[in-house]
Image (cartoon, rainbow, N blue to C red; front, side):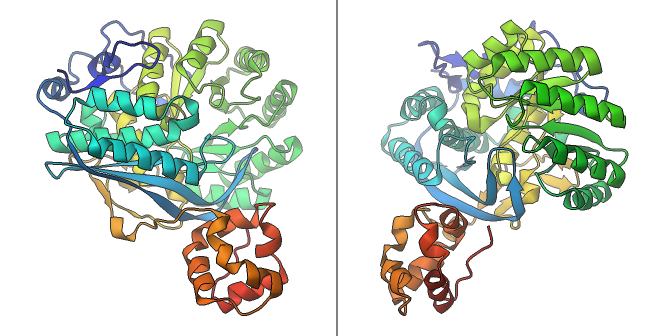
Length: 493
């Protein structure tokens, strides 16, 4: 039996990973930007995947241990987009250990309004999948991934599915002694990313742009879509602070079609042409997406990318067949690893441009996506920057970072690990603070159990502060007294 057979959810016949990654007659992707830094070598099926072929008939997956834990990391500053705000990462880390001792790592990111899962749901689902892997007999990776697809079906569990798939594939690559970027094709061993400026004031945006200019970032991705006039003011401020930068606009569904075109008109008056306009309209506004794409391309030469509008193979096919966008943004957390490879395949056949991005992840999730991007070498736009936005880096090893440039080493698999005993096994659930309710209501001295729980739940406090059902407790005068008595600071979220 072949090791690296991938289950195709739309077909009962498993599809070989090598056939998803190696196609002899692919149409080269369109060069959708005038920026040389975004152009990557053409696909070369002749020289790729020798290691992958060797693995296909020589390895069986036998999982000794598998576990999922909450991965909570603070951000340097709030990350605001048109549809949500994030003050800390509340993701799920997945660890898979094979009987030979090799370990693989994955990450399931949670981004409100974008991923379907919240952290408790993701942690529960990942734990069930891990338990299945441990109790299963040795099997080809195809069978393991097929079962994971059934455990975690569709977009509703895409982020968790991606985290478990990452860990399995990473463990297999580590067993074979192959870096992931080589497993995915070995086209490149490095990538260059943009850097994201969230929705902030013009002065804050200018300060960030100046900082990123000094760090060597030549492409800034600007979050827009909340207020058209404010967006224009921010763009003006950034242009002053970083006059040579290229712009990617990301509206995260925030504009109407008319507003999106108005933004382009006003930027043109300023002499600014973005290299890409990402998800200008609501995910289900197919007519609006098509209209903006055609006007942007024909009037200003600007490519439009579908992100939230592409959450499945069927969405990708609709975009391609209807010529609704110029670029498709691949995110493992909205598609899963296998789903992403399927969409990459059909996109390359159709000649549509490709972008790779993420949610808000640590270097676990960003690293896996980076290995895939480097190995395939087919992405015109790379947006794998969110680990740079974190206040802490819990990941040991992995790719080498120099400003916007990521270099992948010859370490087996991803070449990363977490200090698992230090990963917070915290579930963000307000019911965890039930022992504090009496103190919140009366202002009385909190119990030691309440203080222990409040300290344990510190990574989750921003979620609680913004939870309409709970903020009246945590933000009240009594709540602040309880927090102070427990030596916990209520964050400004």
